[in-house]
Length: 359
Image (tube, rainbow, N blue to C red; front, side, top):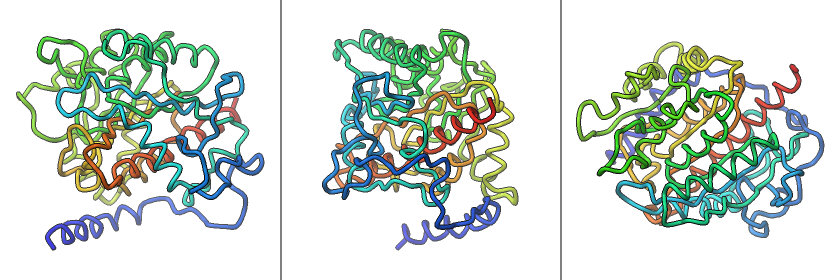
């Protein structure tokens, strides 16, 4: 009963947020940017379809890919509960079981535009028992994608996989980042080891591939081992939006737009920006299947509303990480992850098409 009351209270408080949210006109017109019907993988009944990330067709020939859905089944860098190596597989299962072709609210179908969105499978990791070696494998794979002009959208895996991805995407200069997470992931060495899922963005800044002054971290909360645990975020110039600040902004008269405006202010609209979403940003009521769940988090609807407003960014890729299926036998966390990965894919595709039309 208490849980139901909590949910009701949260949703009642969201009403002013919804009133400020841009309303779209629903119609029977084809999806935005449509270049034809979706591929067969999306049109088949879901119980017959081959499971793939956001139900995109599989493709191994990278010359036929514009946007690559990539699985990164790696979790050796976890500091506590393992299991995210199974994330990509379960995200594919939930995509196949539950996703349809079109985002009903934004009217975007990532499968029917001129962009070829394809599932290219998982990153081949030749050294699964070696963190540094595995990161090198991941970096080499994404470097290849980047050289071919392919935009990557990834399913982790623990959050350390974002480091080699950023190393590949930021080779020609540091990129900005919208980072939605319960944790800042800019910690010091853990138990004497530099590379963990709690430190990728500190290392990315030190490597010169992430611009801290164009990085915003949203939803930070939970307990820490010491008060200066995320001090690097502040010292380097990152914009840290604690969950309490996010809550107040979302429930102000300006609503979700106040958060979006701050993202645009920090990241800019023209410079390259990466979107990284850790599933533990979502309140643990909805996403218990993760390595480090935290209470008091973002609601799924808030996350959807926030991601949908990022189309004006110059998005060069994104990821959804830290889904750990063993800790949620119901599959709900993976379902939530699959839905959010679809939202991320829609916004990146829409961003790319807008950029192409302006060029």
